[in-house]
Amino acid sequence: MSALSLRGVGKVFNPGSDQEVRAVHGVDLAVERGEFISVIGPSGCGKSTLLRLIGDLTPPSAGTVSVNGKTPSRARLDRDYGMVFQSATLLEWRRVQANVELPLEIMGMDAAERSRQAAAMLELVQLDRFANHYPWQLSGGMQQRVAIARALAFNPSILLMDEPFGALDEMTRERMQSELLRIRAETGTTVVFVTHSIPEAVFLSTRVVIMSPRPGTITEVVDIDLPEPRSDATRQDQRFFDLLTGVREGLRAVEDP
Amino acid sequence: MRAVRSRNAMSPNARRLVSFLGILAFLVAVWEGYKWMGTATGGVWPGTGIALPVRTNERSMPHTWDVVFALLRPARRGGDMLLLVLLRAALFTWRSALIGFLLGSAVGFGLGVLFVRSALAERGLMPHVVASQTVPILAIAPILVVWAGRLNVTRWLVVAVVSAYLAFFPVAINTLRGLRSPDATASELMRSYAAAPNQVLWKLQVPAALPYLFPALKIAATASVIGAIVGELPASMPDGLGRAILNFAAAFSAAPEKLFASILVASLVGIGFVGIVVLAERTLIPPSRRLEDLSEPQVRGVGA
Image (cartoon, rainbow over all chains, first blue to last red; front, side, top):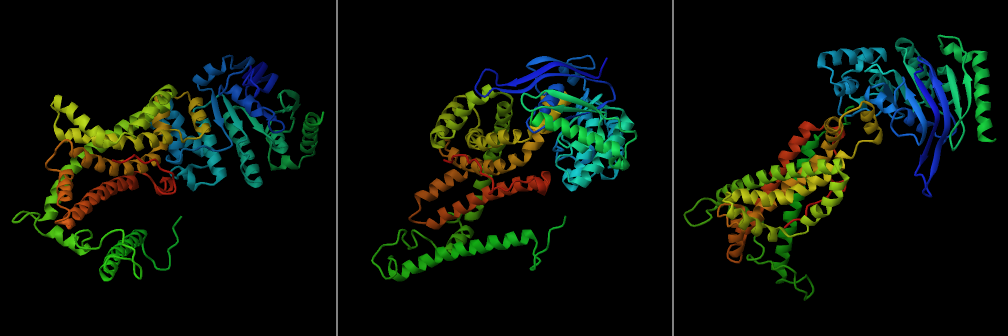
């Protein structure tokens, strides 16, 4: 059973009206457990919509989405998803520790276990020294690490990330990418990652999914056979450059067909 | 981060006090200056024959210090000091206002929660809520007094209900705004945690609404005092500020300083009440989350 399987998935907004938008069309994709899939494509190609369809934030208009053999809605209720958005969306009135505890509180976990689990997650993202800070006291990169710790707090089987590093400067961004790979190596979580950065997609992924503009559909899937574990040295690797070129050409092909 | 100290090294509170006293002194100076000018020119603008809009004699505009002195003299010959009489009345009125404030705030908060939960309730009820504030409180108060009279409700409680009628509105509007303030992504996160509606309300929406609630509570505090004073009139409460103001208004031409003195005390009740809300806000809301009352467009309850 694959971690995630999409068959003929489509999404039409405002069907039948003159504001009808065919955002996603005929997407087929199977993701195995432990894979890191990046979805890349031009702006407005429906890659965020695809992520929202997987995460049960919006229902598909066509096709089926199956997560660990379940419907997305069942998977969401089973708390299979951890979500990270471009903005960290931390609750400003809660300290860092309490922010990470939020999903655990909602699950009804008792206070002692909750606090232990959140502390472990903060250690994982190396922010244990900042547990008692408020979000506004942290930099953008640190806030995003808290958001990742929060998303991983209840051990979700799939991590859905929508341009999580999009608002960060280039140096912070590369550091966060290495950080994310280290975290994933420790947790083994399946990740679906939306981005518009080619180097980011290539550096992080086991496969890169290229989408065409509206209606968004998958035009190419590039296997990323970079050696593991990846490090800053990987970014200098000739194979890395070759793959960048491959993905770039794939994207050019969809932009000017 | 630490705020940069200004050159004159005054604390923000001291600066606020100094500016308050400065403005007070300015207003007193304007009042007395106008009065002095009118007395000097015989009630016309200097160098013209145009009459001043307000007469400057002792019967229309007593000296500011006469108003203060009036507070320290007996209200009636051989009776208690006017200040004491007014403070007693103010305390009585404030009891109704406090109950009205609590009742109105609770109702307003409840309506905000109801509206954020149900679009149908908002569509159906909101026009009535807005309309309720366009009806003059002077018309509502006697109706409530007559109805409550049949039910044998204590009269000062009826006054509290009139006061709540003014207090609930700003709270309802701002609660709704505050409950809606979290980002869409925050709501989606809660959805991804499979949070129940009540968990979303108490863990996300209500904490997010608190900064919006306090400016509304300040308005509700002043509105509840006005509501209580107005409510006392048809309820013929003999002990409150409403009766005192009515009596001193009737005697205005004989002793205007007493009416001004009661206005002073009535506004002190409102200011004190708002002060309590401000203290609560400072205790509960960290500075980074406080909304600036004046930079935010606020919804005002329509007064009496």
